[in-house]
Amino acid sequence: MPPRLALFLGLGFVSYTLFTERRRGVEAASGVFWPTLWYMVVSSRMVGIWLSTWGVPLPGGGGDATDGSIIDASFFAVLTIVGLSILARRGFRWGVVLQANPWLTALLIFMAASVIWSAYPYVSFKRYIKIVGSVSIAMVVLSNEHPMEATFTVIRRVLYVHLPMSIVCIKYFRTIGVSYDWSGSASSWQGISTSKNDLGQVAMLGLIYFFWEIKRQWKVKKWKNLHVLYLLMALHLLKGSDSSISLTAVSTSVFVMLMFFRLQQLRDRIDKARRFVGWVFAATAGFVLLIIVHSIVFFSEDSLLGKMITTFGRNITLTDRTNIWNDVYGAAKGHFLLGVGYGGFWIGRMMNIPWNARMTWVLGQAHNGYIDTFLQVGIIGVGLLAMTLVTTIPRLTRGFYDNFDFTCFRISVFLAIMYINVTESTFLRGDHHLWFITMLILWQVPPDAVPSFAPSLRRTAFIPEADFVGRHL
Image (tube, rainbow, N blue to C red; front, top):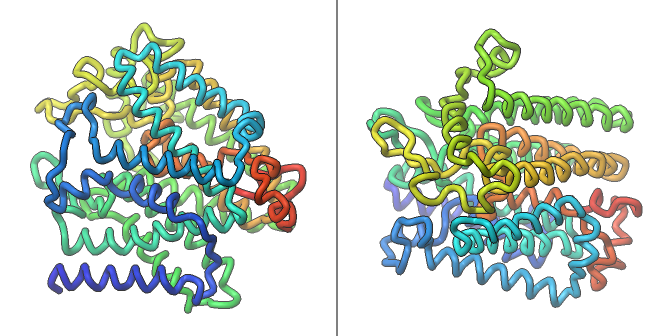
């Protein structure tokens, strides 16, 4: 098939899916255009990259991290202003929300304060603006009159575009959809994302979401549900190319689906379901701690952790990640307590370490979200992040009493993000799609924070009066 015809057909299919949403009986919330645009960009490629791909000449962006892209900076700044304006029109009460989320608020305040001791304060400040933007856009979703439907609408519409267009680019526009290693002998699928790992994360989210949607509507639609096709697309992209797949995304998907099925068996035993989630969270947190220890004290393949790692098809170095962690710990020496400042580590040649024999791979992350948090905001920041995660689980599980399936979805995504950050880095990254999803899960928005919508929110049947967040996401 000619590439242009494939592109035309792909766009036609996406348009049909989007414009027939309500006709197909899919619940959709209004007022989520800007959050959808934000999520579409952070889950694919920056605006400046797309314009450059299409041959549009761009100002700025000389390749230095201290320069950045004027186009992208403008995009995020405009959407941040738009988000804050929408919240102001709704009479959104920031003080109420911040008081209801003390640990997350403390983490964000500490990140802002750390800009002061960053070696690159201006760059750190610009990166923090993206954090502010991600929070404000997430609040636009959570303060919607129908927050649950708004959350699903944003996720679903982005997946409607991302999955089919990634397949089109992989097959017909390979300069966009496929990347190669330095030798050109191994290829990996990246679709309209920037890497195989990002594409794997999007496919994983698609697998979780569409499986949940299909199950929810199975009695009415069965195999006639269009989401079955999207589920197959997610599985196809999750598989990846023959020479390179995202093992993190695949193992996370297996972990999440097993947990989801087990929770379904406990539908009529909610107290037991809550205890089960508590044990899974404890096991996940324990695994995270083991990996952190492994990054400092190297375990052998014969150890318990070594056997766990090799069982999932990885070598004991986690594809050389332990070597990376050893290097970045050395570069961050002397910044144990406070870190080098938010957004201030992966800048400059001393910290942005060229990391292979040919000096062609320049690191931009530690491939571990917890270690990246430590590098930027020190052990204090890690402690604040840990307390935020720990206090989220009991709040989420209370939602089992009101909307069991939706709570399963939320907890599955939350634990998936915790697990992914063992070998990838999504925490504290304002322009990363999983950070945006994390914001939707972590923030608690009390009903009196949105006075214009509070009456309708209180009438929502699946929202418990004692725990507003459980109603919302």
